[in-house]
Image (cartoon, rainbow, N blue to C red; front, side, top):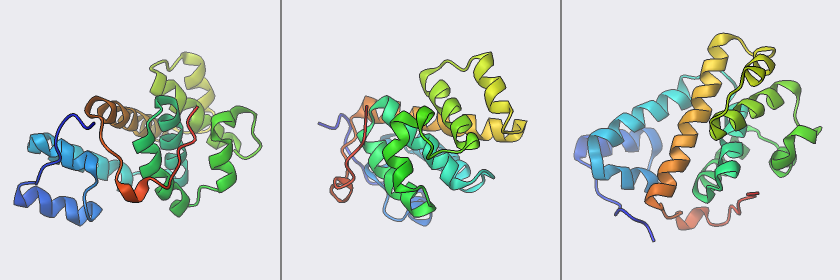
Length: 177
């Protein structure tokens, strides 16, 4: 059972959310219990999604892998549709849990997934940094780290509030370890 109610937004925030996301998902409606923080969250999420330079496919792989690690059904279901729409291949989705040994991912994708796992687990070692830095410059490293960290926060908030998955997303069965 969801721990906080979904709420109606103040008019200005409602307008902004609809501009950005259409009908706001349950996560945003629950965050609306603290409208100023929901507004800040919204703008930060928008910046990650639309002001990033890395390919969206790469970022969606990072988000899906984080969802697997956190066992976040909600995050997986929400982003599975986006991942498919942006070009993540079905074979990659199916192989994601075993990405290290999979031929479905190139070296850059594997480096991004290595970083995603390390950030999500809170253990970015010097070895991880060195491996990832072979494939990405400093700006891209920051961008990918920030994407992984933001969506780790999303997963933690989803868990803390026990956000209920919208009915239209229940067909997106998660492939969680």
